[in-house]
Length: 493
Image (cartoon, rainbow, N blue to C red; front, top):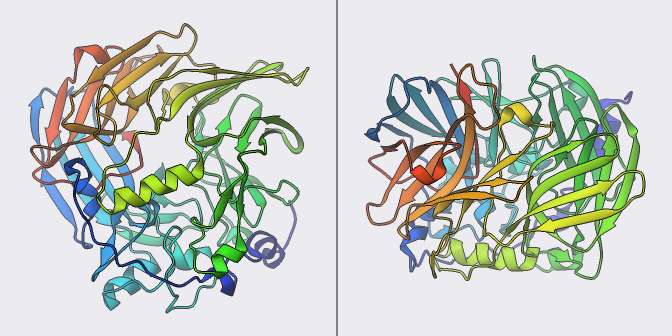
């Protein structure tokens, strides 16, 4: 795509941070902590964390590398709290695993926003889900970049990701912030989503959205941008969090979410002003990876999707697995209650497999009823035909918030395998780490974090990914609790 940097940014960012979006009215809600499982959401104050972990069981000696995680870590300044979980400043964690030992480190991403607010001791800028009067200039998305959602590593370059703005580069050894990442001069400041897809050969696909436009990236394993484009005729929704990649296609589910500017001008945050069109379809956008101009749009009943597992196609059939959540208004209401420390009702997000006949245009959806989120697949099968998806899941949690177990789903046969830690544990996203030298899908370890409500401590758990029901091979316990995060990646050494 040939265009000047000025026209590219103008096309993508025009109107994204107009004055009427700088809404007013910071909430003064405290943190009730009525539900002990929500205690980690109280957040930190900007401090570093460092500790060795006490290993219970035995960590596999062959499990060597660094497990990075990202999530909202700072929720409150002075007596003011963010209203929404999505708003907290990014806290990147690093677990070092080597020779059966584990150590932990966490650092806040030193964004311009974080450093200014730390110095001032109060909120200075609007957040995605909390309306705050801007006391500093807002020149674009990176002025309010929270860098709080996921990570990506290429070589010795580690990036903290946030879907609304640029990636922030960190030192992978120390987690020190290096600064905003610019993939190419003409891409400076362009949103780079928190869910890039990395194919087995290292090719990275990603997207970004602003003002209804959809940006696409193809980046090689060395970090060089091979192709990029901005599609201005898609009418991208006000929120688009994730997508899927198959052998031949990029797949987006464009939910019926629009921004109500009158509500924003009346004092709502951007997220609070998003309106759900229950009577409108979700559009299924399929883009040819080889030619971004070749794209098709299908329609299905309104659905809200945060996360995809994977996709594959054979040229005629395209299959996509994802987790279908509750509609955006219900999700936001629950997130606001969580941020006040109040237990929410359980509105389950559940597994789905969408099949698209690309010749006839027929769509079919297979649905299940398990309560799950944060789906992951073996990294060796990204954009390839796959059989297994792993999720955190809720198993007889009663009124407790969150997931307390793990599930492996065979999407070909429908068989599942589960493990439950019991009612006093909250389980976060786990990722699949292939065993060195293995080739079989799923032959590896499932690793991720959890929180013990009674001990008030966080831990790292390691499972045999194909034998979840046997329970964890090991847990590495921290001497403290860490705020709940969103997403992570493991990189072997």
